[in-house]
Amino acid sequence: MEGDPLKKSLAWLHGVLQGKIGHGIETRVLQGLQVIHAERGFMQFGFIVPNVVSDVDGNWHVGALASLLDLVGAITTFSYANCVSTVADFNASYYSTEHVEIESRVMADKGKLIHVVVQVRKKGNGEVIAVGNLWMASNNLTIAQMSNL
Image (tube, rainbow, N blue to C red; front, side, top):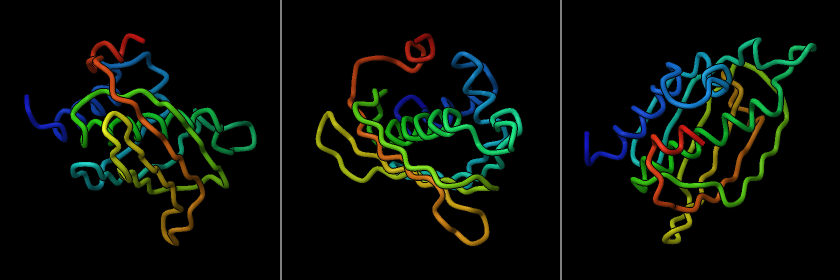
């Protein structure tokens, strides 16, 4: 596993999901996230938005959605670049909430800057309900150091 960025990125994600990495908010936001497919620079997930991250009307809280987009983008970037990256620019568009599928893909590599697009679609009909565009800047932090920020 030492040299395999995909395995390290999935281990990072599983650590977050189990509450062993991060501050706990990530664990609540990602509760029930399931990896469907993972390869270098591309990941697919299944997810049912949990009640704990919904508002009083049952809508997905936009802050929880942004946290999910950020973490999924960072994990995908790590699987591609084998380094922890910091978001340099984050733009999210949000339309609806449902039982969803999430797809994250590295779209461009500009050296120390990597562009990742995360799309959230309704399960079943594939309608795009949220899109996150993240430009990630590589840094020298480790996964353990990122967990303490």
